[in-house]
Amino acid sequence: MSIAKKRLDPFCDPKKIGEQAYYESKYTYAIYDLFPVVKGHTLIVPKRHVSGIAELTDAEAVDLVMTIKRVVPKLLKIYRADDSYNIVAQIGPYSGRTVNHLHIHIIPRNKYDMYSEYNDKLYKDLRKYELDGIAMHAVAPEIERLRKIFKYKERE
Ligand SMILES: [Zn+2]
Figure 1 (tube, helix red, strand yellow):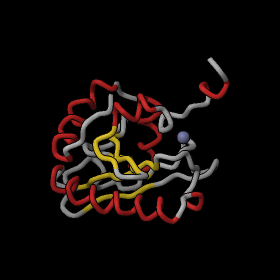
Figure 2 (figure 1 turned 180 degrees about the horizontal axis):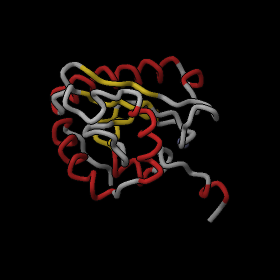
Figure 3 (figure 1 turned 120 degrees about the horizontal axis):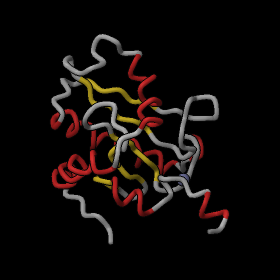
Figure 4 (figure 1 turned 45 degrees about the horizontal axis):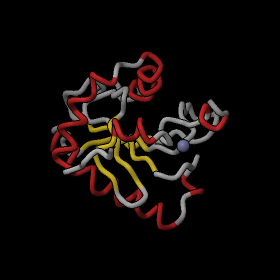
């Protein structure tokens, strides 16, 4: 394996993106988080490898925000999120990020979720869940469900 391949992060890896994606636009994917803190936890990921927002072209930045605009209302409906969600991005080496490829967390919320009384715990758990992890098979049914709703076909 070459050094370049070893450095492939999960969001540059077509196989991993292929497993998790449920929506895509010209420059952006919406993928299901492998370590969801709540059901519906989604990542908005630019297709091109960038570390931060400033590196996006104008067209990519518009496309990324348009993807959020298209995905969020459906997520809120599907996960009964009472018009509530968190948008979180960890950018830069001191932000707590685990993957150096820009990704924006969309976390549907409602008054019955486990963070409703302790909102700050959500940010701790974002990292904890990534470190503890759960298996792909645990989130696969949710990805399938969203693919049907978004009429997304996995690429071969
Ligand atoms: Zn990347």
